[in-house]
Each structure stands twice: as C-alpha cells, then as structure tokens.
Length: 86
Length: 301
Ligand SMILES: Cc1ncc(C[n+]2csc(CCOP(=O)(O)OP(=O)(O)O)c2C)c(N)n1
Ligand code: SF4
Ligand code: SF4
Ligand code: SF4
Image (cartoon, rainbow over the protein chains, first blue to last red):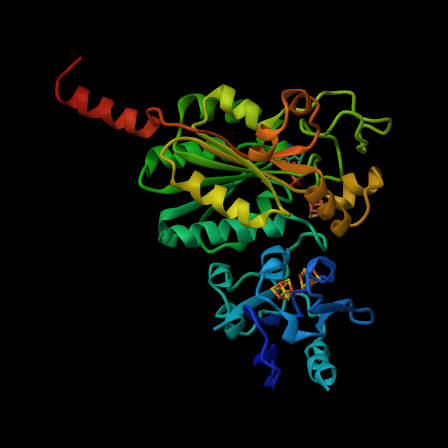
C-alpha cells in the first residue's frame, strides 16, 4: 500500500496492489516547486509526470515508486520527500 | 481514479514566499535543518544545481550527527554563497571572495567549531584565490565547499578561472582563451589534506565526500561540479538544466574506473574525474597554535 498526500490538505489514501522489492511513498510540496523537470525526466519507473498547465509534477504512478531516492536527492528546491515503506 | 485524487495537490497555487506548514519540515531530516522563518522557494533559477549541493551538505552534516550550534557556515557572495542563508546553523554571509578569510578568523577564535566555507568558483579562485592557497598552506581546520559552475552566475555570466577553454561567456564572446584552474590539483599542490570531486548528478557521492571532508581535522576541499544553464548554458547552447544534468552523467568518470583504463586512454581522458584524490594528515594550524601557547606559557623559548 502506498499513500499519496497533498500538502497542505487532507491525506488521501490510495490502496495499491502489493509489489516485490522496496516501495516508496512520494510527497511533493508544490508551493516550492519551480517546475524544472529534473524529477520527472530522471525517475526510472516514471512515477512522476509533468503537468503542462501547472508546470508542476504529478504523481501518476505511485505504485511504481521503488524508493530509489533520485527525485528527493536531486530536487534543487527540496520540494520532494520520499519515504521508504517497510 | 488515482489521477483525479493526486491532481488535487496542484490546486495549490505557487505562492512566492509563503511559509510552508510546519508538518512539511517534519517530513525529512534534511528539511528539519532549513531555516523555518526564511522565505522559500530559494532565489536560484529553476533547476539550478546549487540546491542539490545544499541538500547534500545537510545530509552530510546530519549523517555525522553534529550539533547545529557547533557548525558554522561561512559564505562569500554569489549564487552559491547564498546557500548559507537557507540553513539553520551558525552563519556568516560575508563579502565576495573573503569567505576563507572570515572562516580562518572564526576557526582561530573557536577551534571547537566545524567551519565550512561555501564558495562559487569565482568566489574561491578568482578574487579569493590567494585565501584559498594560503588556507591550504596553513592547513586551517576548515572545509571548503566549492561549487564549480564554470562561470560567474550571479553577475550574469562573466568567465571565471574555471571556464573551459573556448567556452563563451558575456566577457568572452568569441570563446575563453585562458586555460582553467584544476581546483583539486591546485588544492593538493597548496597543501590541503583532503580533496575530492563529484557532480550534482552524483548527489549521494557528494554526501559521502562532504561527510569525510567535514570529519577531517585539517583543510579539506570538496569540488561539487554543477552547471549554470541560465548563463553558461545559454551562451554555449547547452540546453536546459536537465540537459546539463544529463551531460554531467555522461561526461564524468569515477577515478577508480579511470585508473583501470590503459595509460594511453587515461592520458586523453577529457571527462570530469570523480573521486577522492588525497586523504592525508599533517599538523592543523589551530592545534599547532595551541601547542605554541602551552610551550610559551610554560616558560619555554
Ligand atoms: C568585492 C566584490 N567584487 C565583485 C562583486 C560582484 N560579484 C558578485 S557575485 C560575483 C561572482 C559570482 O561568481 P561565483 O563566485 O562563481 O558564484 P556563482 O554566482 O557562480 O555561484 C561577483 C563578481 C562583489 N559583490 N564584490
Ligand atoms: S524515489 Fe525513485 S522511483 Fe520513487 S518517485 Fe522518486 S525517482 Fe521515482
Ligand atoms: S525536481 Fe523539484 S523543482 Fe524540479 S520539477 Fe521536480 S519537484 Fe519541481
Ligand atoms: S544564475 Fe546560474 S548559478 Fe545562479 S541561480 Fe541561476 S542557474 Fe544557478
């Protein structure tokens, strides 16, 4: 199970099928995001996609996140946090 | 259905300078070390690598478990130097090129502190070049974090002492004719006891090198290779921040991999070499000075 949280706002639980290997939970604080595309272009399983209208990433495939931490260690604006799910 | 849910995150409008809710800072150890009363997002251009180096520095300090009050960040002026104001440690935001001079004074007054000087390539090697070599020569217990974006970013893209030969800058419209300084070689030659280089693409390697550098007693240097897509990238048609980030991945090689290549291939390598180049020990200035005080106060000559 992975959870996607819109911050600030209400937690929104998305129940997902169990997968093998490590899983992660992505949080994006859209107010700090400058829309640079780094997270979207480099996320290996394409968890994120750019929202062209808002110029912000959207979490389009949360169940695919492997908690590789590329996006949160490379977001220049510290607008992403990934938590590894146990 | 998922989409409909997640989209709500974007109902948030970009509100410059709005303080984030407290619970955002609680989401990670990195965010915990940011200044909670500071205006975010940062001043940097969208996609600038300097923010990635800031994340690496915070994670390195966090990894070492240092007390925030025992860490002092000393910065000059520039896009890179601006980094210091966003983090919740002791901070000196000084003048362009003088970060190491202020850091030296601070280290002598407070040898117990972990002093980290944050500088751009212009800051560290052009106006601050003298401070750089003499801080290394004295082996002051300071960590120099040099973000090398090969240009003066803040002032609009003038060439710096690390601009590559032929690279265009606002002050080199036909291409730079001055050979660049190799920062790491210079640091080693001047006497630094720890010298390492990595890139913002290899952010976790930066964490590791920074943690090692900060743990050193003597003068340590970490060169973090970044990019300035806004000035250097535009003038040299190198594309967006993501293009320049990808080029750091493609055009860099680990020192261990380079060492395994045949000598003739090593000789013609033009890629950025990532790795630790020296890790040694020699008497650190404030310790030598303390010994001197003990000796003289003990009546010895
Ligand atoms: C004594 C002095 N000289 C010149 C300047 C103008 N100035 C401000 S930042 C800067 C260079 C910035 O380049 P760098 O240190 O490489 O940092 P970057 O902005 O690229 O991170 C210069 C020349 C100044 N502020 N003070
Ligand atoms: S942690 Fe890795 S897999 Fe998960 S969203 Fe970030 S980049 Fe993608
Ligand atoms: S890396 Fe950060 S700033 Fe860039 S698009 Fe992703 S969330 Fe936004
Ligand atoms: S001018 Fe260059 S170095 Fe400065 S914030 Fe913009 S991209 Fe970064």
